[in-house]
Image 1: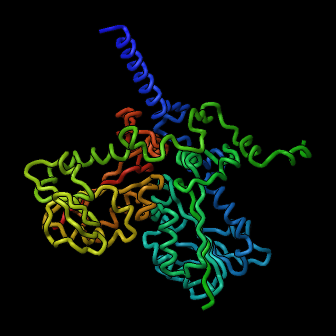
Image 2 (image 1 turned 120 degrees about the vertical axis):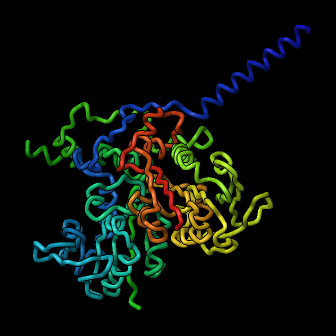
Length: 244
Length: 237
């Protein structure tokens, strides 16, 4: 073997090793876990013990955008906080309760069966994070449509990427997580497709925060507002009942 | 002082009020990033975390994978986990010409003969079918009496872009909803739901960090509030 071929083969080998190394590096950058390599999340209660949950940021952003719709007779689930916060000045709030009525604005009823709810009675429905905890989701959407006045709108939000809500699971169950596509198709079964608006919020960072119960106050507004269609944390829907 | 407070942003005020101890502060490492490590579940780098759970589940159910076995799109898991005599079939929506192929549609039931399989392995398929109830009904129909359905579903997961762009990505389940859905078609006492995952694994999964990067103890730790994979075994009367 002469010197020339020897040098050639050595060069080829080093080139190959270097190529492998750079390829390896590109393939998987090293994960620096910080203190996120933990089996126990920071907060089991979605971040309520640290601040406010990430999904609440998105829900309030969505309600803020749709303030004009929250007018007239508004039905909210379990309380009237959002109606008071985002509703127009002339708004009449109602709260849907399952078991007992404590306040004069409370209504006892069931969205899934439609029990206790009259036809064409409300101008607006606020269903924040309600549909994921109802097994018969089609029944709930059908009844929501029924109790809306023509021209009335439903503002709903559902979970995309989320842990189990233990509070709901222990009471009435926690059933579904959605994608923007499935929730749109569910609403299209009952509402006019042209009057449905679906907005998905979240990205991998806010999804990670949400799973670990890190509050939205610990993230920057820029990070919260970045939208990545593969990582829906909250999916918000506005569907209007047509006059026909 | 009260005058100044007006100028402190609301979010800072809340943080100050909660005043987290140092031990509870988040050290983000490489996670304070708007892009995940891998977009494709890490499939090109190693084993995606959900696949680890699926294989664990199928391994534990190996005794039922025998006889006439139907799998979706491929026969990989049948060949890997089958015990005893088996004949593998792959269900395709369109004809591809490969051997052992069955052309059919789970939703309409077209091309699928009733009571013809001893076992059906349906991994990560139902989340991508809008009308998953018809699919489960058809799966029940094509099973022989005492046949077993082994299905896996996603709990906490990002959108699978590959599937979303082709046939759609629709559903994420919880242990409770999967049990209830299968109970609509199978007898309740013949349904067994196993759930896998915890907060760490869920984080790794959505970031596209593969199973090889985690320890076995971490993967096998079970936290009922963080289902990554939900595996259902249902048998026909």
